[in-house]
Length: 104
Image 1 (cartoon, rainbow, N blue to C red):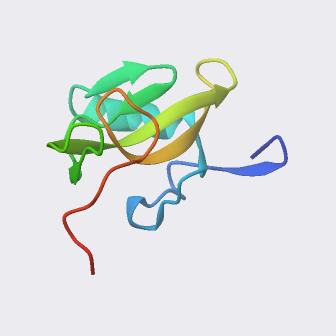
Image 2: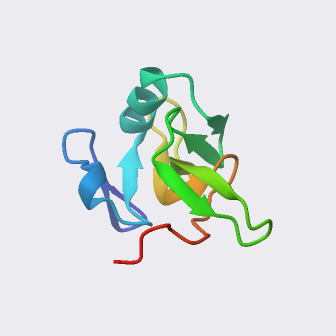
């Protein structure tokens, strides 16, 4: 499937280890992710997996905060929504930022 000329990945094609910010995915993948555990955040512009992926240092506060796999809805209507992968973001945010504890 395509949306605005870009490929939309299905749940079968998606792989978290190969995910890139900006990848488009179908609603089924996001629904499955949110059904695993209670979500960390569930809004149209910020749907986050309920378990933290890692921690990053927040540049605004200097504190270490958990990050979560994050998606935002960019088109379509339920049950055929299209979501964009935003990376591993702080709770309630859809932009990946901050410093990782690993610099290798």
